[in-house]
Length: 95
Image (cartoon, rainbow, N blue to C red):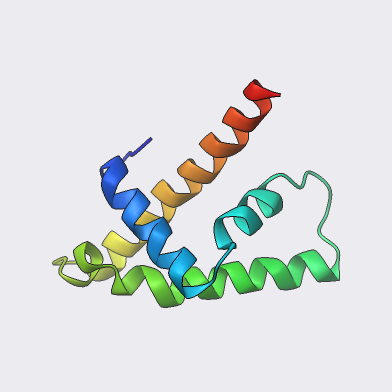
């Protein structure tokens, strides 16, 4: 799953996001599955997801302790996005 971080670190970040906002990973999967233009409700949901990423990821220990915190957070965001896409693909394969 991981590109920049280990699977365990990505899971730690997802757990931190879930602790902050329960159900956020499912909400991320739902938003990532939308193929049409977003309506106002979906835009608001996307904004909420971005807020959680912005608040939580800088606090994850391995990001907070990184030499370049902005790059570390950006790379973790990419890995979390990859995890969301992998979960969507896995669900499609299992259906």
